Amino acid sequence: MSAGTVAWFYALDADKVEFERVIGKPLRSVQSGDCSMYEYQVGPHRLVAARMGSGCVNTTNTVATVMALNAVDRVISTGPAGGLTDATQVGMWLRVEAVMARQSGKVAEGGRIFPGEKALRQVEFLEAEWPEGEWQKMPTVKLVSGEAFVAAGEVRSRLAAEHAAGAVEMNAYDLLAGLEGRKVKVLILRVISDLANEKASEDFAEYLKGYDGKGGKLVAELVKLLPAEANEPAAHEALRELLK
Image (cartoon, rainbow, N blue to C red; front, side, top):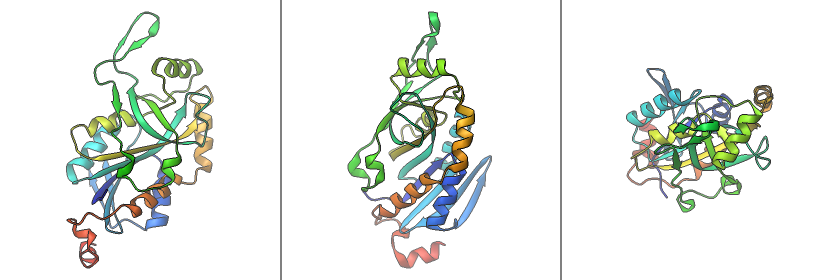
């Protein structure tokens, strides 16, 4: 269950603010193209944080850049999602177990979408590989993920019915696609920020006003509990000072 370098892909700036309140300011920041990366020392672990941005393209570019420049052992992602069912209410935190690409496949008569190849991606997750924490109490969810912000009741109902999904968002599918073929442990957490209906834009903005950055606190507490990777220089206190 050990870890050396953790990549954290977040969506909300408030999460980064809260993470830094718990952990402290980054040791350094790196700019590569449009991607800004922030490097932190969390006990024996090195954590690289990057904001995913809005939509598939930004997420793909961010994940590709971070993974190309860092030898990552684990990936954590936090962000908002729109609830699609009565069971997914605003403020609820969820652990993602599968992600369906919203735009993948063919549209048949009546507008029904038939998923294409690799439209569904499972999150390869083993509970024993992560330390105990609040995430264990979170219900699991299947997400629909796509480029557009969903703010229509008719679309909301159709996504829930056709994909048996509990929430919709704009990052997770391309996050997993960017990690394909990489042997990393992945934990994706989402908080319901709106209900993907006609009031979604208004509700999302209102939610952000009161959001306390809980995702950042969850990540900080989780990474602090991860056992050290013995081969990582940062696992040795004497060497950690030299790495700063």
